Length: 246
Image 1: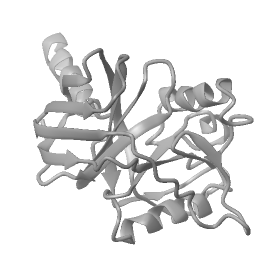
Image 2: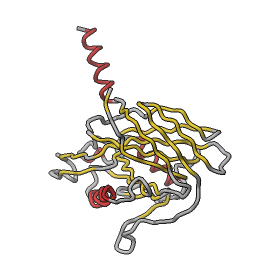
Image 3: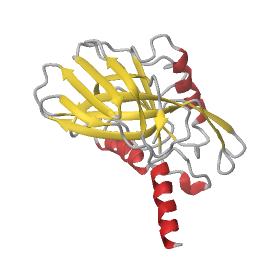
Image 4: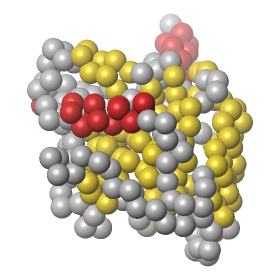
């Protein structure tokens, strides 16, 4: 009985932090792509309109070519009645890092960060900031779970490669909390995230483990940043050609 229970525990553990694998070739231009970060929660009653806006980017022709959207679900609203199945504590910590750097006035949801700068969508700011500058080329390839990347730029200091696996086409029925009874549609949800530093701006690393594994379709976003600042310098993204769980 003890042996059987141990085996079941290992199976459960692996399912909670499963791998996604596939093939993908990504290459930015020299001009900076725009990383759009949304900090959100299923427990936040004011978040659905922001998520609907992020979801709408899926229909743009320049998705992945110019706009790289990611949704970080935070866990700091879980205590009010609904545990967000996509949330991780470290995503809220990333948001707090922006606040410490004075990029955002406080930590709240929904919150957009566009290329590392706070942006509030409203009556007078319905279009995303669109600033173009030459920052260098990011090239990344995924083969099974292995990642190789290089960043071609004039920067000589160490940088981090940040890799986010994104779950697509998600539907959640929220049973409690501020959004009780709501059926939520989610796109670009970060379900795996890791960062690796490099002094020579070449990386050999692995896809991150997933903390949510029930999506049928996945994408990937990757960006380079300074080692002590989460602000993206250059970003790429795309849909996996094949995906599977192990």
